[in-house]
Every structure is written in structure tokens, then in C-alpha cells.
Length: 231
Image (cartoon, rainbow, N blue to C red; front, side, top):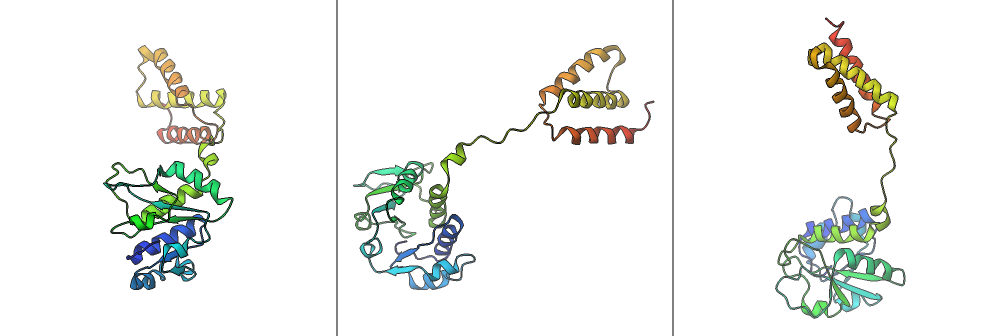
């Protein structure tokens, strides 16, 4: 983090690191008061106490094989290639298997300067609605680290299959529901057959699961019990 001035952003960034499993925070020329105050951030204090402080970006990234800068783009004319977060994160995860990778965040007011960016191999941007809008620094750090920590395979995984209710359970629900409807006067004796068909089709369209069927049956039995004997 380069020239960060707000202790809240420092604390938020450190807490995001702790949340997503990142432990090596390096700060370059932080505003001293902000750095001291941030060390009391809930959940981030241990990480901030271990943070390494540098006077130049060159020193901070000296051992890194890949250096990525972050930018909102805006009206600036950039001399680097820029990748969206979801694509850049893939490249970073792959590169990290070969050696340390640095992700640079600039100051709240100005972001990374052209000189700061000259240390970068390429730039990363979060796809906001407008490229002229910048995000809060702490939020930007959280989003980037989440994307880096996220398992793409988990995001593509299908949810576990839930067994549907059996035909017998579905019919039980239909029968009890029809009993309650007759008790309430909803069913017209002249159109009872048609109503029964509609209710059965409706219940089956609901695609009730096996685990929900007993709950619905219990609800309907309780309703019928409360209603008492049919008039």
C-alpha cells in the first residue's frame, strides 16, 4: 500500500488480508499517524504489527517476480496493459506458484502515480459501472483479495441434488389441502371435480422436495385439527 493516509482504510485492508488468508503487508511511505492508529483495528492488529515499512516501491517489491498495480483508469492515459479483476486474478494465481507477486494500491486521493506504475508489469482494474469512478480503498482491497482467494471451481460447482417428494407424499399433501379447502367453503360442489384436478396440478408444479413434504403435511394436519370436524 503506497502513501496511505486513512487509518480506517489501512485497518480494512489488513482485516481483508486476514479474512482471505494473506499475511504479508508492505507499506510504502504511509502517513505516520494513520499507520499508528490503524494498528488498533479489530481483527487486523497482529497483521499490522508485522507489516514491513519501506521508503520506496523498488525496495518493497525487490523480491517479487510479478508486480501488479491497481487503477480505476479514469481520464488517465496509461502506458500499461490493463486487465479486469476476474481475468487478472487468474494470471496472478498462476504466477504466484512460481514466486512472490506484489499487488500495489495507491493513496486514497490520487491512486498510483505514473512513477509508481513504472514498477508494474501490468495493471488491474475493478469493473465499476463507469471507468471514471473510483472505489473506496479498503473496499477495493477486499474485492481484489476475495477474487484472488476465490476458488473458480467452487463457483462453477452445481448445488447438491435435493430429492423430490415421492408421488405418495405429493398426493397426501393434495388430499389434505383439498380437505382444508372444502372445510373452508372454497370448493363449490358443482365444480368440485375440476377444482380437485387444478389443486393436484398446482401441488405438482410446486416441485416439493422430500425434506419439505413432512413439514407441509404437518402444517395441513394442524390446520384441519384447528378447524375441527367438517360442518
